[in-house]
Image (cartoon, rainbow, N blue to C red):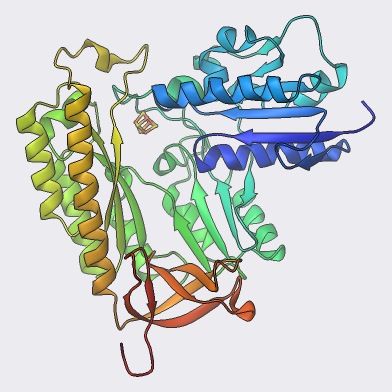
Length: 434
Ligand code: SF4
């Protein structure tokens, strides 16, 4: 292979994006270079997701499209779908290599060998997945996603992630501090800590998530950290109080509640009940009155009767949340949820989803309005869109301002004004206070 160009298509979460970047970094050491997907390339990598049935379908479409558009390329399929359904992926004509969770660091020799008659499959049984691929990906010039943990031991009844990514494991605190230092040297201002169940950080070596964030907080040059998502039972009072006093950890919480009804939480095999969740929200509010709280909710889970959904929606209405991330339950082969008899019809799932999306918009706008007149530290992103630029404050309020070249990738102190025309952001307050 004279030319060594690699085109990558990544599906799914930020963790997958970070891992695609890490796989590419390994190939770069052997002289390969990344080109935008769509441009000519000798190697293609499709990094898949398998969180829902729809995700699987999108994976298949992406793989078929890649082998069609790159008929002569060496096509690698990695990620959760590849780990869970390796034979299905290998059967797609044109695929050269199927890479499961434990082999993401081993692509090079197989790529160098070139295409074989049949696709090769590199996977381990899910209970044997043990390796950790370090990854830190640049989202844009100033932001990066640092993978701090992989895998999950929770086995929620609706979820296949523990089968695709194995048990919880983490690298050392010291190695992550080093990665953060390196990112700061390269110009990163904001780091988002990502993983599958990052509150379980420390299961590998007896350290803890609190120790990790205390150590990262000392890294000079990083202005802001965000914690991507923390299970409610693992978000301890100590973590909340630490974020409240830290100069670098943003008052921004992403909480996977999934249901506000205790019976549904029990059917989901979640590790808490709604009282505990309400206490966490109360403490965050008491310690950080302006914190942003985004909450994941699944609607239409098997067993979610109309009464249970109503009790969940009522619970959500009662809490001072800033936004809901609403997902419709998706049947996943091999999960325990399939044993629950009561099934929610698709049309009813959609009704519930629409209702919670509307509630989310109400809450987000109310939260934005509560920030009007406050000074916010906004990290403006790169780019001029029709004379405007935007960025997020420490507490995740989107601010839209007239574009200025000297504000790109910088943190500016802005007094928040009123919502923009479509309510998706606040604009800076004008000198007369409007
Ligand atoms: S905590 Fe539950 S939902 Fe989250 S990855 Fe683990 S098993 Fe899946």
